[in-house]
Amino acid sequence: MDYIQLQNLEIKLGEFHLRDINLVINEGEYFVILGPTGAGKTVLLESMAGLLSPRRGRVFLGERDITDLPPEQRKVGFVYQDYALFPHLNVAENIGFGLRTSQRSVRRPSLSRHKKKNEHVNRQVEEMGQLLSIDHLLHRDPTTLSGGEQQRVALARALIVNPHLLLLDEPLSALDPGTREGLQRELARVHRELGTTTLQVTHDFEEAVALADRIAVMQEGRIVQVGTPEDIFRRPATPSVARFVGARNVFAGHIEEEVQDGHKSFRVNGLRFAVVTPLSGPAHASLRPEDIILSAESLRSSARNSFPGVVGEIADRGAFLYVTVRINSLAQVPGTCRYASRSAGDLGGTHPSSHPSSRSPHPHPNPRSACPSGIPQGEGTGLGEEGIESPPCFICMITHRSLEEMALEKGSQVHMSFKASAVHVF
Image (tube, rainbow, N blue to C red; front, top):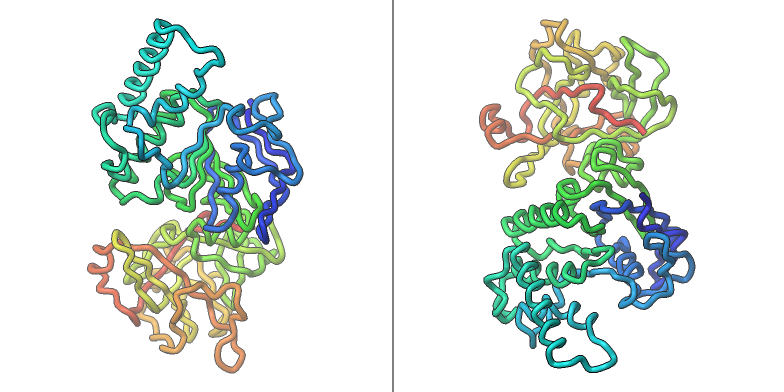
């Protein structure tokens, strides 16, 4: 059921412009808007909360047009990145603030009725504290709490009024990794238990994948793609989305019409590799670094693409490493390249399993062909010395144990393989 609808929403703040926002969020859905800093995510949230007025367009909550309603009449809960707790109120008073405000009447209630209302509010505050595991903190001053505890208090304050929509503005970005993961689990659990329609904005794609039913990618004030986490991260719609969600290997090239064994080939800077696609002609291809297998020798596997190369750069990222591999350009390993011509600058690769000779040693490439920047070259000119096309480089992900076992260092000779189905062509 369509619950939140944004129709042709446009907001202008100084030089920033939020343009043609059309979005539908289902009732009970956990929806995440993902985008870099400055994309307009918070501006969009504030317009939905009634804090900013659009130049044009409409905002619907259920069947109600709430575009012109003030914030207090929208039944929307808002949790800011910096928590925005009241320093002069304790935790219990912060949580119950919205509830007490909404229950005020014009006529002064009788003493007994006032007492019953206070008891009701106190009971709800206690229940919300238990839901978020902060009931032992209700007497505390918010300034004495940790970041994770303050975020739970802010979340409790937003939820206690039973909002029709919960808006979360980067709720985990200011927390340390351990606290962030714990609160991430709490958000998922609370959403399962309460079923509140939730819209969260973040720049962290791992956070989005962990929480979202669906994701909208926002860039430069526009929604550029909407889909499930699988759609966004495996099938990005544009090169910029592919890079933002961590594909890292993004190439502009050409799909050749020739089909071999049900696969077409994608050509970029003299390199051809097998892909699965109905498209033809100019296109882009993306390949996630975790979908590439790196080995010291050519492997027998189901992977259609296998290439020899040299390590150009190793970047340590703590739990894993990114290894940049430049495909060899001076010679090709005999028998491994079903799509390739015999020229040095025209490499291709397919299934190595039927070619035992693929374990033969290969010449060391020219050191100057190593990829110094660690950035895939697919969208550049691809021209090396004397105007000859140089194959692109690929970024692969490996563990520290794999690095040690293969004794990899800059200049090491390696083999890289990946399945045709792992390549997304668009």
